[in-house]
Length: 206
Image 1 (cartoon, rainbow, N blue to C red):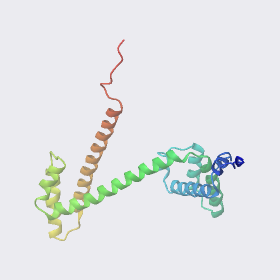
Image 2: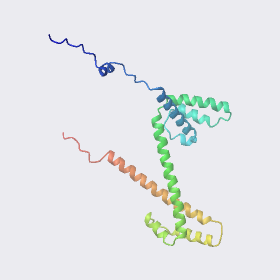
Image 3: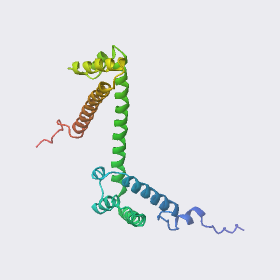
Image 4: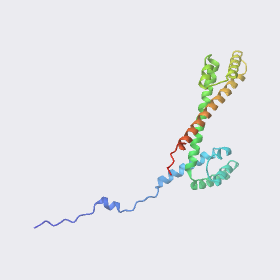
């Protein structure tokens, strides 16, 4: 006699596919997002009003943060922070994060330029050949003014006088470095725009 056909049991993996998928964020994920929004709000509270204007956000949130700076009483500040927290929950955090990241990048560049200016100042005063190297590096056409400041700064130091020219050398070098950085940034932006909108885009034949 033929064997009786065994009744097949449904495969577990197919049964699992029929179960509804829960797409809602987990409690841990929601908690993480709330902490991130709180950190973002605290970053915004650290900004001065003029710095805040450069950050894209709803005017209600900007006004609430600006108002926070004028509050002194602890309880009033606590209530305002809660209000800002509620507004942050409805805000789009992406453009705010991008603007803060760009601002942080600019701050790092400014700090790097500051340290570079300090190093060049010291080299210009300490080394006889540094001035010619600096002029070549930054394509200085007229560097006689800087040369005079360097000579005076060396004289100040040898005579133990207050470092007035020393500070002027630093300011002059910093201005040159800032101008060079601005020129590089402007050229990069121009190149990016040219690549985004090339002049020689082919036009369809009519």
